Image 1 (cartoon, chains in turn red, cyan):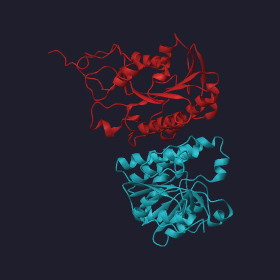
Image 2: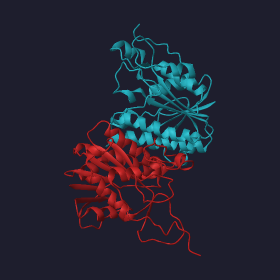
Image 3: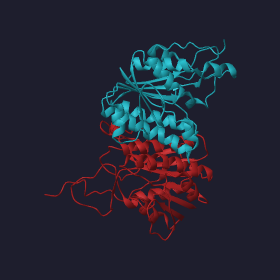
Length: 242
Length: 234
């Protein structure tokens, strides 16, 4: 399988490349220069022509592109970038695409302020924050495309990434924490899963470690994708020994 | 009341400005220069100070959100421009409005969100929109999405007016009857009703009413005192 990675030189992208390179042919793209042994292209995801060109001959797209702070660029990358990725995927006849975003792409302040065991199958309440809203719009675009074309979208939600050996004592972790290596492994699972096993053509997954907080739920990810995180940061959520 | 109307070059905005000026003070804005006797500011609805300046002192923003045709057709990537305008520019206007104390935001959306539904279905405002990937329809759906979050947070009151197919009475007489027909002056009256009846969050289906008209407009009739006058079948 030939996999196009958008945003391959960002925060998450290099970890995804590392996890997938033993199994797949990768084309790694980013808006910045990329130092990689794989085929690479420097592209702007907000430019439809560039995304269409980058997707030629590929079988699937993983969209890790993101820009959080600048208002123009956030809409360019997180919203229109999703539109361009979906257009490209449809034009290439791809049957799946993996999109990414923070958990508040769906589960925004409205949920996190009040609730526990928050699962990904809830109506999107992004808030008006620039990062969550632009990502939420991008995910909504993905969903609309799946309702009209023969393509599946798996949307992976993340929040806090940690090195797997970060075991500082007693400081607690964010309840949506995952190790880089477990996060990256989820992408391999998403590329491998038989699409007939997905409940619908647009499915959202919470990607985080097995943690005791239970503010969120990763049960769906474990049940459907077979996600089995290795790292649970146990020393982080136990108080320091006296 | 001070009312800002966007997309001032559009026929709908022009007629709304004239009709609403009987009881409100009107300010207009557009991406391009236009000739008008109303207070007018050209602007791109960016996230700089100019959008805050534009909405200062305004009570209600009516965001018609139509890109002038020649700008759209001359764009390198018109689909991207459409999405950018309905999402980012709407966000900028909402953010500036909520920062400057604007009380109400009225967004012009489209009944084409239900294009794929059978015409004989009893679609009302509580039906989930099912937009196509047509960039105009999709972008209006995303514009609604953006508005909804501002209402949910209580930052500004938002009314969504989903419009049928806008036509002048002369255009209607020349062509076949469109079951989603919305005569321009009927549309104007719907916006006037919305200006006078703010909702924390309200969605209203707006079209002319006639034998064979497609959408139920009962919600607009009861909340906006909407009483369309035009009948294309007569």
